[in-house]
Amino acid sequence: MQTNIGYLLSDSGRLLRRTFDERVRSLGLTAVQARLLLSLEKFPDNNQAFYAERIEVEPITLTRIVDRLEETGWVERVADPADRRARLLHLTDKSREIVEPLRRIVDGLVADMAEGLSADERDTLAALLEKVSANLSADRSMKDVANG
Amino acid sequence: MQTNIGYLLSDSGRLLRRTFDERVRSLGLTAVQARLLLSLEKFPDNNQAFYAERIEVEPITLTRIVDRLEETGWVERVADPADRRARLLHLTDKSREIVEPLRRIVDGLVADMAEGLSADERDTLAALLEKVSANLSADRSMKDVANG
DNA sequence: TTGCAATAATAAGCCCTGTTATTATATACC
DNA sequence: GGTATATAATAACAGGGCTTATTATTGCAA
Image (spheres, chains in turn brown, blue, purple, cyan):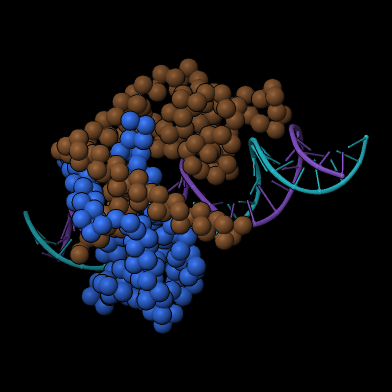
């Protein structure tokens, strides 16, 4: 087959990410910044390590994302009264206003990508992707065991 | 639904890319470097603009990828006799040896990700992903029209 | 033939990401 | 109480990506 399943998944995933990136850019955000803000709204008042885990980046990466968001007033770091090592993250008034438009972008994107697919087809796609994810995750955790 | 189709596609795509990256790293290559070498072998003797298009990065990005690959002797730039602006890219003896292992990695990865899926399920997944890709591509080209 | 738009490659500047290492603090165990 | 281990955040360094702008060169068109 010309376009195999691996390239297809890789390409459609990239296409989705790129489209998301373009759309949130209209709000002045990058993709990962948008993901962090959504996560901040859904699970408020946690430390940076928590959000790094949520949005699946390394802690150091999150540090720099937060650096930039703090500079431009989208989030604030607050000392954790219970752990002097940690900083809790908070939305600001500025960013609280943007969460709603952000969610509309997410919903719109999912609607657009799945246009023309029946409910059954969506379910099938979801199930197959879950299976693929499980296969790939299994590989990775096997490797973790081998290394540690 | 908890895990919607957008997150699933995004996650499985990222997982696939990350796994690919880890496996080719065993050959001393990054993911995008590996993709370029495979492309170089399949469509030899073209200029940088051509390969940028093939692996879907901007020309400036390809420039720097080639910078690093040239430094470590994986590719070489050759002046194009027909166009003094352009440089053609060539595999080297060193990189020609690695194309075969690289292809085995690609095949192995696709096999692993699709493990446990029947032939029918693979076809279904491919068809649905093609549909999703088409939807997303349509959105992007619409935007291009609007902007240009 | 001149003059201008398109093309090939690259530079500068920014953001995202990871690996490895460091500092400060917390916690668990002896 | 004191030591060892783990955790939170960050720094340094490197690869990769994009947007915008610049320099050569090409090719078409007046």
